[in-house]
Image (cartoon, rainbow, N blue to C red; front, side, top):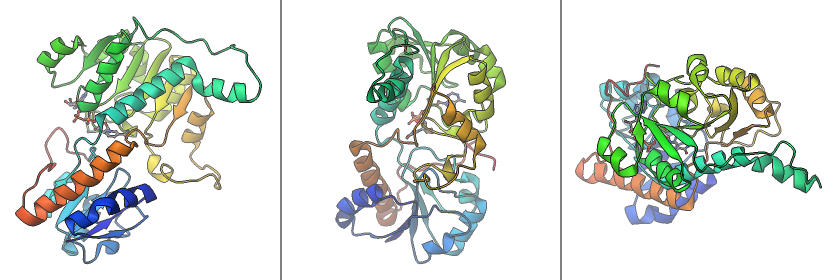
Length: 339
Ligand code: NAI
């Protein structure tokens, strides 16, 4: 079995190479992200392995089918970057890693909340410069506040467990509410509008679909509590970034912690410090002292990298040896993405 791994970073190669021999696969690593212009790199491969910023749109998938690639193995949970309808049309199954460490992402969301609430990022620079003033660093007790969680899947449930530990009230929205879980966890499902109007901190943990794209725009922001902290570790396009910038300028949004950004593919995971930033929206975001942008690193723990490598190679092995599609994702009305 030959696999072409796109978007490879040194840490990806390290974690895959550690266990590759156990599977006997031949893996070819490429730095570039898969897109319609570089499909040829996959020539001779049985499977391609891609991550969040690779693009498997209809044209890319058509070319993969021409090369007789038999499987697309996502080494991530989200699959919004794959045209599942096209994959079905060309008969290329898609598998993913549904959960590599919900703890990693949930804990990163908490890191963003706490840093923004207590202004740790600002305090860090101040004290290094001999400025020990507390002016502007006032935060609030998490205890007794209300968190609004959008989506109550694996990551959200880990986050909710932690936030309940702080003594927070949790309200949540999910189109498929799990009432039993809610009763056990001590949370309340509410409508999105009620969540927006009640939450002191809002955290997004739903997939990017046609329904959720730009769900946080002018209208949603207008319903939020003044000073709300907004956290996005889901996908960049859940938030209309220009609306967020307006909300920050009007001080409606108190702070934003963004591990994802709608145009992240051009920047995230790369050192672009030698370049002049040509994305004015990202540049404006980075200019706020109450915004923290991290480079889609929520997943980035040792445990998660090990799980990603194991599950990905196991998915490929199940397919190659038994034609079993463990962890397959298929086009369904609610997750089909229109490109
Ligand atoms: P999951 O599949 O366990 O949970 C997603 C939940 O969202 C489900 O309960 C589902 O019913 C709900 N949902 C579906 N449509 C919704 C809608 N319109 N509004 C509100 N909720 C909706 O997924 P998991 O593992 O918890 O991951 C959540 C998201 O986090 C992924 O889709 C991915 O985009 C993102 N993610 C980010 C990572 C990072 O490094 N920042 C790493 C892994 C995932």
